[in-house]
Image (cartoon, rainbow, N blue to C red; front, side, top):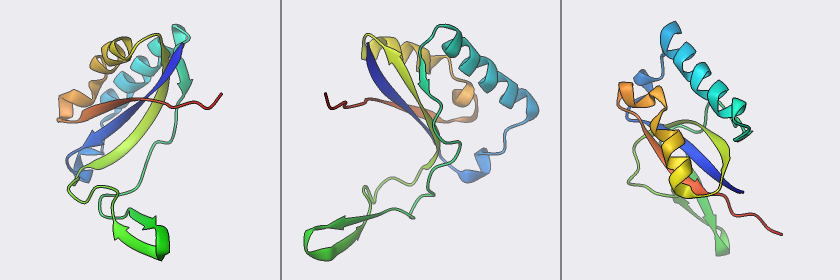
Length: 113
């Protein structure tokens, strides 16, 4: 099986104030993934704020980034184990973040053998 990162994004940090019902939906969603033995890592609840990231390049050059055009708030991530990216996408589609205008980026995790 491969591993895929599901990176949760919100347009505004104000959206990151879930109600108890929304929290329960997320817990249930995570529980269903864990019950299928597809949850590899729950990750962090919070990741850096927009504009807070910097990239250090050769010759000690520091730039905003990695992507200065991204203005979304990254609210967290999980790692799932599936055979294909399409299966990881199907898992992502069930997340309640879409009810508050959020999105999920799905990326394969590169593993060194």
